[in-house]
Length: 173
Image (cartoon, rainbow, N blue to C red; front, side, top):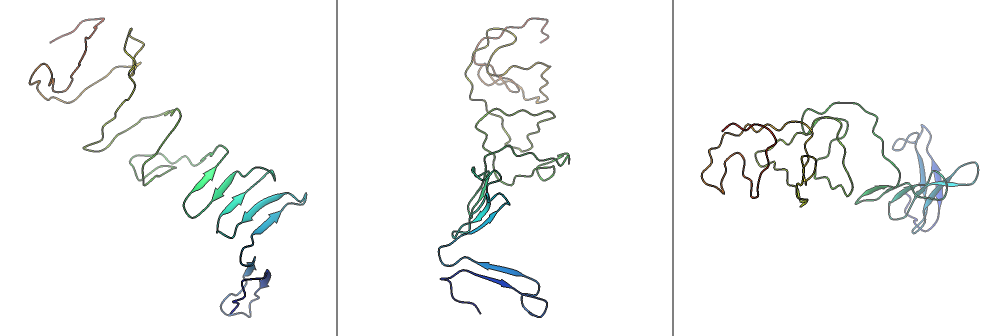
């Protein structure tokens, strides 16, 4: 057993070692790190004493950092797998928790919200001043399959509108 954690060492186990056959073990010492360099002496991978791994492909800027609590990427992450998603547990990217997106989100397919409480809430407050403006602008049609009967002016059943409404074509009631 190697218990000395104050010095660096390299251990190569051949096929004769029963517990670690064919393994390469690198020890950096108590507070050291393991670094890998390219032929141009550029640092490309570091394993820090905290267990964090950092990847620096250009030798200057950390592009991927993996720690015990999170993984960070500073470049575009491109998932080239094309597996289609038919539910929340299928597809090229499956996320078990929530997703926070600080910028725009573009979906070039269908967006399905599948839950009894699966609401879509829009925080935008832009008023509609035409057919092509407002917090929500729909280029195609809108179908509502809910058949709940309206109970009052403020409880409209399948559709409630707090403000006025402008209808550009026919309306059947």
